[in-house]
Image (cartoon, rainbow, N blue to C red; front, side, top):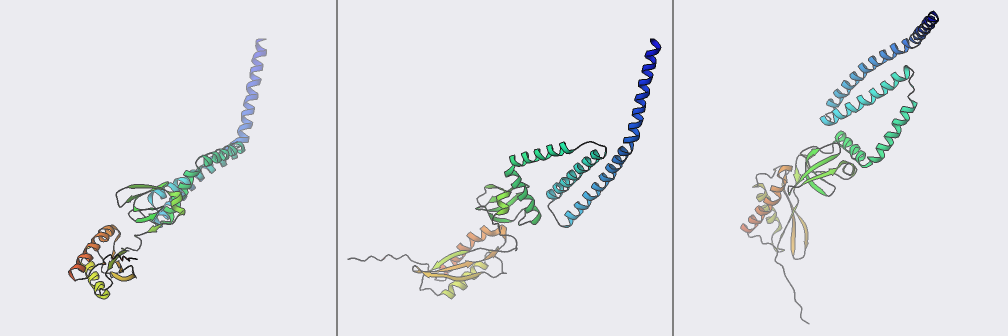
Length: 278
């Protein structure tokens, strides 16, 4: 009986060794091939990521966007590489792929608004309708951009309020950039009495605007007749300045022009009320 048990164990060990040998012969080439594919694929992904980084730098993409896009491409390619390696060694990935797709749909539905903001942020960082420091008007707000992120853009208004704008609506709406061309026209309206000499008022106003240290000499300040009605002549007073000095010029020019008109005998409109007795 003892020798019979030894013989049985020996036969089982021999059978196990034979099976291991057959599996090694069957799977060794696949495993070696999968390892080679993984090593070569990892090297190729690394080189491609470096090439993308150089291209993003050449195109002057935002640093945060460069890092994000490079990471996104690297992660996506590595996932595809791992799935290919598992497929090579015989692991069925159909069920895993279906599970991953279902999870992606569920996450996408839950984060619908956030994904829209994310997509808008990426598009704006690529096409750059504005940059940090620009003065913009968008979504009913006017302010200087202080931070531009993937999901939100932060602007500081003239009354020192911080406004956070979601990138989704911002990217699909109208954006007015006051800084793009370097100079910014300040639109003012001031009125004179109808019996005043318009050309004299124009020249005095232009000279007064030039006295302001933050008004640009080029383009030249402008004064044009906007409307003649309601017992007055309304003039469009338009100095040019740079974006950071907009509000200084907006308020300062009105005071300078008013004082210059007073000094030169140019009167403002006087309200009149006509009373008719019946």
